[in-house]
Length: 77
Image (cartoon, rainbow, N blue to C red; front, side, top):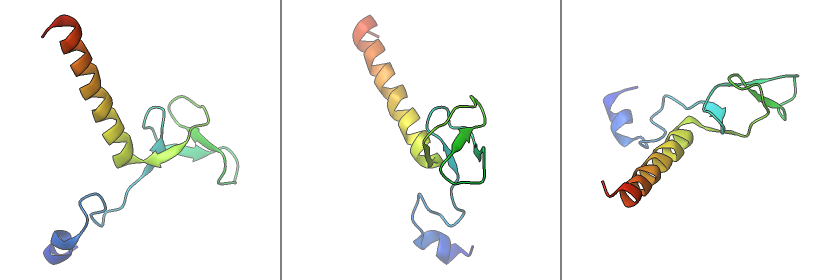
């Protein structure tokens, strides 16, 4: 990727692509059989909904900030 392509690219889609991860724990997914309908989490071996890795990271950050705000309200930190 050239500098011009990098500068003009979308920050989320920077040309390197993204991975689909499980919605439960962010692990990679695999198919139990050869259909695209059945995605199994490689960490917990359950069927999970696939989401993009940047979306999973955004959800984790939002949850962290919410838990931190709850702790501040509860403990007055």
